[in-house]
Length: 221
Length: 258
Image (cartoon, rainbow over all chains, first blue to last red; front, side):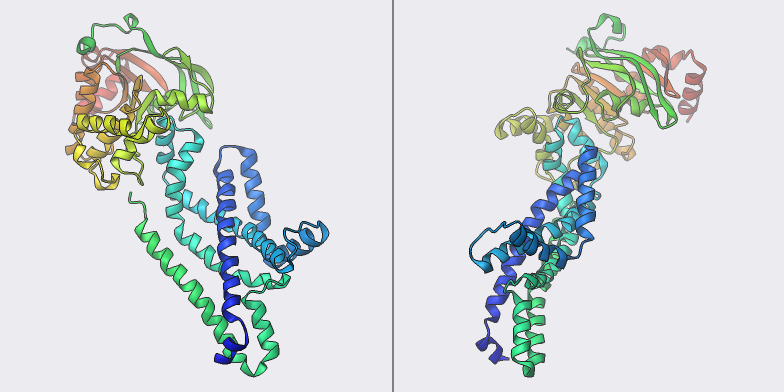
């Protein structure tokens, strides 16, 4: 197994996986929050737009979205963000992952909003807070706390879904695994073990931390 | 200010604070408010009584537009209720509301519950808002709990904090929607005492309650509702001793006999 680490940049590939995960998680959180606000807002048009987004994106295969980011945006529309081929693909993979998982973040947040009793929003409005202020000060802080567990779920799925980025040539773990398998079929089992254990090390703590946080930050009613 | 509780002081003699004219509202097929006309004067304390389902809670909630209505108008201190938006939020800040289920912000401390509105809506500094909040907590007797969370307080304490939160906005009128109905019996009085003291200080109050003792003690006027209509109004003395309508006699007979 030591051979794999000396012959290939295993840690570097996991580094790319972590960068992909962290950046697209942040993007998904921001986009997902915006879509969730649209879906709970009192404006009918925004509700429909938010619902359309979620249902369209959630039901599209991730591979399709990632490949579209490459063929669609980079090749056809020429929307390159960098002259460096690897960097360009990394950025577009991050964008694709962020928009895809935003749909799941939105739904996790909406389930969090449902944990907040209607009286909280009524009380916020009754002291004269605007819709935006009620959201920021009362509804969303409680909704986020109620959504920690499903948000953790989405983050774990996102971590493993970064492997799809290999389809457009991002040098993350799944790409390296394929190379190693082709070069060293004699080490098939160790290769599987390294990748599998690596992902367990990445995702297991997410589950532990979110379970701990959801208990610690739970809103007592 | 304390002379304002004189029951002989007729509503007509007061400057109007809340004026409700020709108000109608449906919940689907159900006509919950039927042509309501009611004027509440400045400094007046009006207790609304009636059987459940009579529309009294809905009436209370339409006054700050937590419930929309179809026809009619409501003005507060001469200003008609605006539709949704910033101007409605501004107007709501002038109308304090106390709910049956307290509705304190569960993720904020008692002190933060009270300072939120003054800081965000009235744009007060944190120091000033906290100073006012502590004075209000003193007034309702829960200073020791300032840094606790709502769930750590008893129901009676939570409701007194809810009253302080509404008062922190310096409202022109206070609405109470069955403020003691969710409380354990031994906590009802501590809340009613705060409300009585508030009534004596000259606050304009509209109170939905089943507490007849409070109505006798603090109200200038009793409004009796049934089936979405105002059936009878009068001073507490006349209403409780000589109700004229059959519905009111029936209602009082049921609640005063036990």
